[in-house]
Amino acid sequence: MSETTPTDAEAACFEAGIKFGSLYHQFAGTPLSPDSAASIETAMEEAIENQPHCEEVTVDVREDELEAALEEAAADYTELTGRFLEVEIIVDYDGCEVVTRMAMEDGYPLMRLESVRER
Amino acid sequence: MSETTPTDAEAACFEAGIKFGSLYHQFAGTPLSPDSAASIETAMEEAIENQPHCEEVTVDVREDELEAALEEAAADYTELTGRFLEVEIIVDYDGCEVVTRMAMEDGYPLMRLESVRER
Amino acid sequence: MSETTPTDAEAACFEAGIKFGSLYHQFAGTPLSPDSAASIETAMEEAIENQPHCEEVTVDVREDELEAALEEAAADYTELTGRFLEVEIIVDYDGCEVVTRMAMEDGYPLMRLESVRER
Amino acid sequence: MSETTPTDAEAACFEAGIKFGSLYHQFAGTPLSPDSAASIETAMEEAIENQPHCEEVTVDVREDELEAALEEAAADYTELTGRFLEVEIIVDYDGCEVVTRMAMEDGYPLMRLESVRER
Image (cartoon, rainbow over all chains, first blue to last red):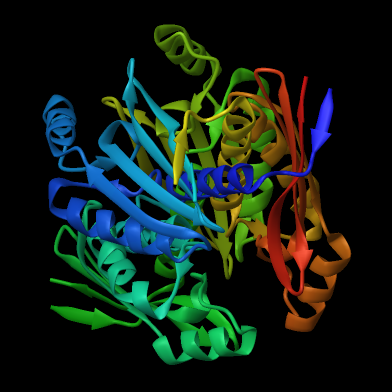
């Protein structure tokens, strides 16, 4: 087993993970309806963009999925959870750019590293 | 000791408390800067207005307090907490209207009942 | 329409609502498994009991519901939500005792006032 | 600029970041007192250990810092924030072990990568 000082790319990936975990667990559980979808998207983007090394956050509420859930439950609103989200986060750490995404896969919200680019 | 079925006014006050606790504990800890203050205000208002019996939510981020805190800490952002918030929530439960407010008092964010009006 | 200064019973109901909203929105979204159910129950109880006028909080994770959900999803853990919770909160405000409960009703977690007792 | 498929070490660092962001933003804002410190430590550890690739989470509430804050504010409880926490998280992703820590530095809670070890 070899131990090394973390590289810039590894630090960038760590930072990207922090942003994803923060975004998800800060906002999961928020009351959500089609009328409030746009404002929570913007607030999530701008809140997480405050964090260090965070270049850009894009949040889309999957409105068709949301409307289907509300119809099935005969409800006016529900709670924000991964099922209703598509998220892209771009981190830049010392010139190393990491692109990450969250989307549904086999019925689960999966966060994953898309690319790591060093200048 | 006498036990009674809760009145509409009591149920309205219970509902108003739920909204306040929800608002505070859903959003406390959110990364906050002057640039993101407006979007979190709107998102908090629209999210909590989804809840049953909730007529109107008004959230103001106290921007002078926020800027003072950032200057003191030489920081670009901080975490949302009661110190930075003024909130009014109006609940209507079966014709009983309850007005509640949160503001700083002696250095603490205090949530309180302003008025209970029955038709 | 008549406006009155809130009674102690109304203030007690407001306080009880705050505790419920706090408990739910602080902890909704927490990663949850049968192994971690006991520790989150205790932490939720003790955290909310810190709040003013809060006499007692009892949280039960509905383990059969949790195990059924995990089996259906072929997953090891899920997120804490109202479906997995039974909660009782007792508030005492200036001698007025309010008992509140959250449990599932028609597929929804419902928070309600059980009783209001004045000495 | 060169783009590469993320390495196992980078994926491990991303996973470690997710755990940290999750832990912090799930539990920040929780009502906290010396009496409830032990139960929230355990709940945070067990909740985050549910997440994939998470080997071990160790949470210490800094009780002297907590008691100093309560004394200064003449309060019985406060809200959980980074100032009161020391956290270590160990992630194992496909044989790559990442150790991460959060502690105060210059008055701020700083999350950082301690080591990355590949077998």
